[in-house]
Image (cartoon, rainbow, N blue to C red; front, side):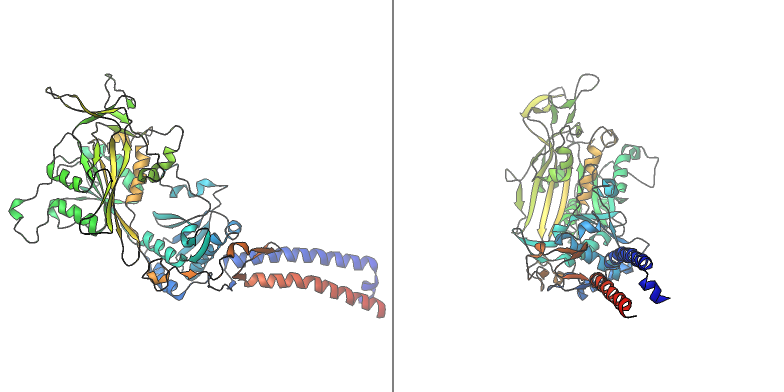
Length: 551
């Protein structure tokens, strides 16, 4: 029977046709299987000289806390391109496979890929503003409501255009620690000194209605809110990531009867300590027409010289029903190197930018002089830098009160700052990382009002939300010996590349990536099988011919 089948031409052709189809189907099935095993199960052999694709034992120890996190939330690592795109570049490939290794080792790590080129809305929730641009080579590390968006370039060190080392383990561990470090980040409203604040426990308060959008903005940023009476505490709580001083009407006067006490700390000293020791952030909205000497002195030392005059801008304003105008439309800082542009550059770059408005406002000057920055007294490495955040057009005028109590006497003209940010930068002597403190100041009692934050026609809400996101970041840092760029790191720079031409060594065999240093174990078997199939077919053909001739 077998001999007849092999000698029958028609039957032999049918058998070979079936075998051909079976081989093609098997090849395709193996292709899909190998892709799944190689990518999803991360079954590969790291043959790189530097062990680029292997988690170090120190990295596993450093990240062991992840599986001890309370709750059901996972640390999610989201890549903004599909796996095929990620594996085509060494810059993204190494970071991607490191993340897959973390997912393999820790139950509470989840790696996700989103092709934002085809579906840009898939990462919308990670945008600080509606116009914030997230790029395909970005990676997003998130935990609950907290997240960081970084470029995969940030995991490498370069010399010009040449990659020199990979410190991705240190960078990734630091990012994960940062998004998981504070369980309940809190914004505190200063509730004494006559401020206007939101009290979540008393929802019927009139002041709550006036500050509802400010409260909403804070909660959308993942912050819980509490009240704080500065005069009743020794220091600002450690869980405070943002302190809000909204329209104080009473000065921060020290108690002279307490000056002889060794442990006496005034309220402004508490603010200083919070900014210096805790690397905190403060937002201030003050009434330009009120004199609060001690509070103003505190702000002056931190870079803000507040005017007592009313600003009007004839060329950029909103006219009231009676024909007067106190609401001005501020100008964006379009300098791409400025602090303001870093926050709202997406708006500033539009041909028709949404308006950022200020109502009933004075102006601010930098108390540091023309240099816009100083070194803190007694230091050579801690600096304070003043940055205009919004300002008027060059046609603006500032007016003082005349004898009738009207703001009608012009005192200055030109571009005037109406909101500013001072950043305190302290270089950590061990890690080499910069730690930041921030104060935002607007010289207007109405800056946080619903009239501005609650009006969707203006950009106030979006921009202040983005500023809040920037100011509340509390970064943590991993063990520098993981590969920090610090001079104090025993493993400075991480995995130093022995071969810097890694970007030009990629090749493809049957659509399977073969790259220097990374060989999927499954891929190797796949290539062997692909090579073995023609040999098997040839051997089969030889056997058939022998049987036909001799059997």
